[in-house]
Image 1: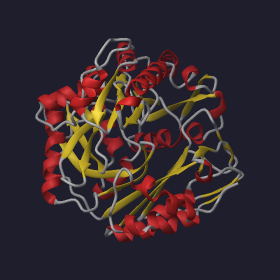
Image 2: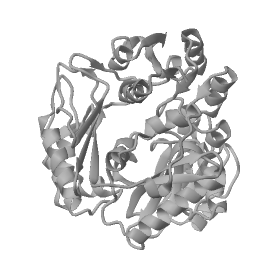
Image 3: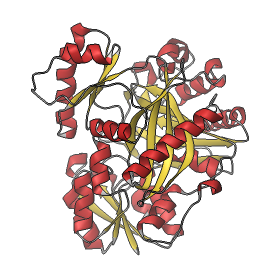
Length: 458
C-alpha cells in the first residue's frame, strides 16, 4: 500500500490521513464542490473533485470514487464510516479495479449489513438475540397482528437495511402497527433502496453497549473491551464512554465472549463493532447489530487501550505481518466522548447549518483529544451530517474524565450557528449521569431538566 484514497470527508477523513501518514502512505482526498476548501482536502497529499454537494452525486457515487482512485494512482481505498463504508457492491467494485479494500469482505458486508440476516447468523453462533419477526417484504400479505403478538409490545419496526437510527420506529399498540410498518418500509425504500422491514421487541429500560472487535479473517478475533453508548436522542448517539459504568466483570466477560464468537463464526476480517441491548432490570443482553466499519465513537476505545484502530485496519489490509494476542489488550482509566453538533436544542434539535464566524476549540493534550473537520470561517453544509467535532476526554477514573470533558466543553466558542454544547454540559453535569444511571431513554426522561439547564439559542 503506497497511496490511499479516503472515500469520505470531514473529521474521519482527517483521522485516516493521520494513521496513513504515520505509515508513510500517501493520501488522496475526494471532495464535493462545497467541500473544496475543507480541512481534509488541505491535509491530504492530493485531492480530486467528484461532483456537486448532494452526497448521491459525489460521496455516494461509487463509480466516481473508484475513477478518482484509478486516476490518482492510488492502490487502496478506505471508506471511513457512513456513505459507502458498508456497501458490498462498492467494496466489490474497488476490488474488481485491482485496488485494496480497507474493510471486511463484501460477503460479510452483505450478510451483516442486512439486520434480519445478521440476527439469524448471530443466533446460529449462540449469541442471544432480541425476539423478533421474520422479514416482511414490501407489499406482502402477512398477519401483522399475529407477528406483533409473538414479539410483544412495545416493539420497533426496523428497516432490514437501515443503520444509525434511520428506518426505526416504536409502536406501542395494534392500532398504529400497520401504518408504521407502511411508513417505515417507504422510508427504507427511499433511503436504502430496500423496503423490507421486521419487528423487534423494544426493551423500555435498556442500555446500548457495544464491543469493539478485530478479526483476522481466519476464524480468530480479539476484542478491545466495551463502550457504553446509551445517551441517545432519537436513536442517535450523543455521548459515549469506556469502560461502561456499573458494568460487572462477569457481564463484560460474557458480552465480549459473545462478540468474539460471532466474529469467529463469520471469519470476520478487520475492525468492527458488535452492538448489544442490555436490559437494565434483568442484566440480560441481546445482539442488536454489527457495524462492519470503524465507528464514530472509536476514539474512546483508542484512549483507554492505547491502540490505533485505523492503523490496525491499514496494517491488516496491506498484509503487514502482525498479530495481537488478547492478553496484550489492556484498558486503562476512563474515556468520555461528546459529539458537538450544529443543531439547536431550543428548537427540537433542528440542524443549524451556516458559517462558523467564530470557532474556538480547546487545545488537545495527554488527557484530551479533539477530532474535527472544520475551522473558523468554514461553512457547515445542510447536505451532510451536522456533527462538527468530537471532544474525547481521558482520566484515571470516570469522575476525572467527566470533569475534563466539562472543562473542555466550556472552552468551546462558536458564533454564526447554534450548537448542542450547553446541552452536552447539562448531560455531563446531571446528577443521574454522574451516578452512572445511564440508559437509552435517559435524554427523554430528563429532557425538561436538561433543556432548562441549556442556554436558549435564538
